[in-house]
Image 1: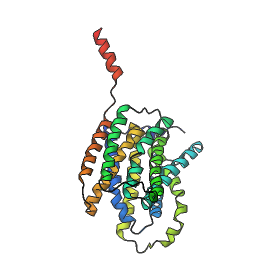
Image 2: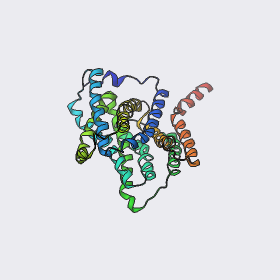
Image 3: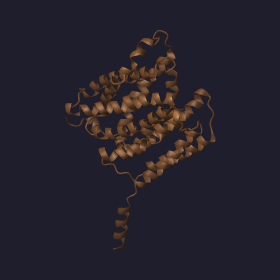
Image 4: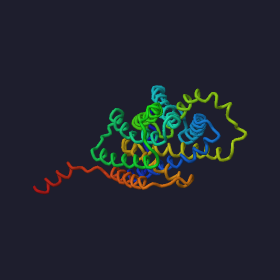
Length: 319
């Protein structure tokens, strides 16, 4: 199968547009914590995920057929999409939900988000030719310190043995996320973001279904309020379909490791949603952490300096 036109189409002005999109999407994902909290008042967490990604996949198959004229993938690539769906959707999203029940919110946030770019940088050379610059590591550490401050200012981190399972699950989110971020880059060179994301969600939902067998019958479908329906609809159309498509479209433009650092905006936006919708307090540590985070992200977004080119130009000017 030849690469689709959609897969080869540029995002627009590379650089600024890609960074801007990633920042906006990560921020929306953070604000979504407040929306999900409303949705989970009437729905089992795993059932919520199945409805979110399952309905999104069905709608995206229709969109894929309309935009690209077909929905298929090469049989030889089937296992890649299965693996991506299991790791990037089933495991990642399930671990996020379950870890919150077995550890503190601060533990879950730090362990699931802070190491994510590190694992993306580890996996990136396996799947791509992405080079990890020293400046990326330096600015990344500044951003990581910022996100840890934002989270710790609103809660305490604990390594209590009673929280071991939850901590391990939260840490596994970072491993799954780093793998997904790097592994999808070569696939996006052959398939459009729409085709890849559609099949990833489909297989991811399929492997979630066995964990929802009891929830379907236990849910009070007739008593479900409009707030739950609205939260689910927002997650399907905005947070899942639109945001994931744009993220997967923008990520290859700047690389898996660099893009992963923009996920640090998610806990900042989550803290902001708590202030706006649940009257949660703002702490000075969160403001300091936000400043550090933005400083790091601005540094990450700066173009790499080509010292070799500068030296050659300087040498030629002396001749």
